[in-house]
Image (cartoon, rainbow, N blue to C red; front, side, top):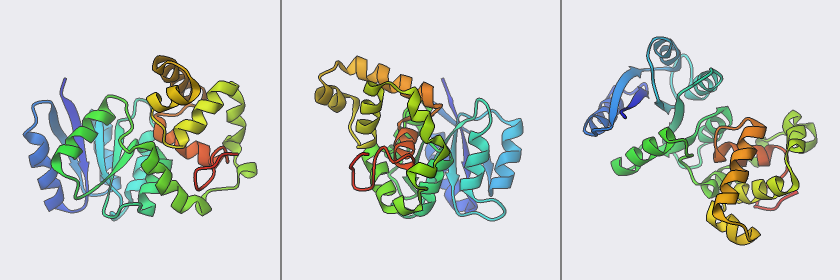
Length: 224
């Protein structure tokens, strides 16, 4: 199955470089390009895309707002945020907007390709531990737990699911969670799936973001 990729970046040379790397892959095809968020939204109306590589700093409409609008649509493509600096505030905003992960623009080609394949298969690209570092840095930007309207959503979870959610947000893998809670890895995977379904989340990255927003996990790795 060919992964249909869209490149969104205002730098033509960068798009050219990414397109050359992707074109050499038998399972990928660049089906569309755009130089800003407005153009990206227009192109997506007429083009079927699986994964969008989204720059953040662009004219007319930045990548964060473009990501938010894309992810709000039904059957939306997955979005990978491209950022120049590690732990960029734009990456933080992109994750909150619905992106499935973020990558540095100077990422080695092999890592970029692996990231595209991971996102396409439904996985999050950035490790939860990396997301935690990002959120720890920008935690002051988050609303207080008591005022966050999504806090009530956690009431849909069982005690065990909340326990699993805390560990996911602390950066543990399914295998590590299984060891911590003395469960099978398959059981943990089931719990994670139920958490995603009950809370209407796309992937583990959004689990981490929501855990911080609601105060379930606090900056520094503690939990409420």
